[in-house]
Length: 163
Image 1: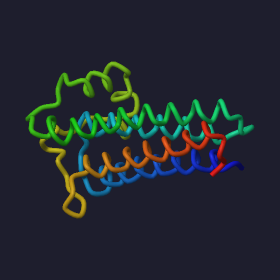
Image 2 (image 1 turned 90 degrees about the vertical axis):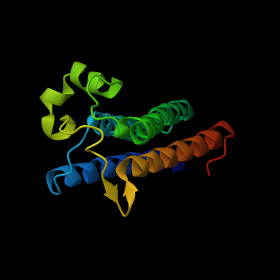
Image 3 (image 1 turned 180 degrees about the horizontal axis):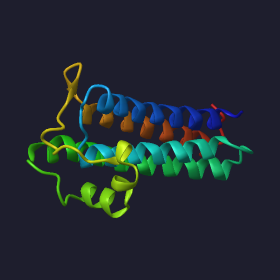
Image 4 (image 1 turned 30 degrees about the horizontal axis):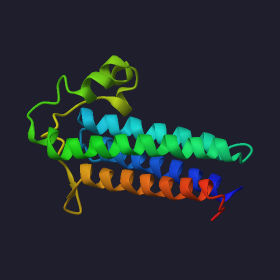
């Protein structure tokens, strides 16, 4: 397996771990998610899907570069969502009719997979901390690390440097 394929596999695994931590927080510790929380779960799952697809099969430079570019784009969307959740939405009494709320309900995911994408709290109520830091900032940090890793691997690919 090539270094770029391993990197995509690591990124996918870390993204799935983030979703698992969110699910444990919700279902074991009763920390109910808001619309922005579940929207970020969706973005992590999209990153994981792209990462797993990129790590499979032949290590073609074009495919790997495209996957890293997609991962970077999704991570940037995640950074935006996390910043919005932390700075704007968490100050609101309701997330109803926000972009995240509309996205999750219009896709049907909230009702089709409620244990994963159900919206059970307002953004203000979902302000939960872990080690004194809000979940939104933990998520922001992870999205930023994924974005940085993608930029690094993409630049290695474009320079034709395997490491």
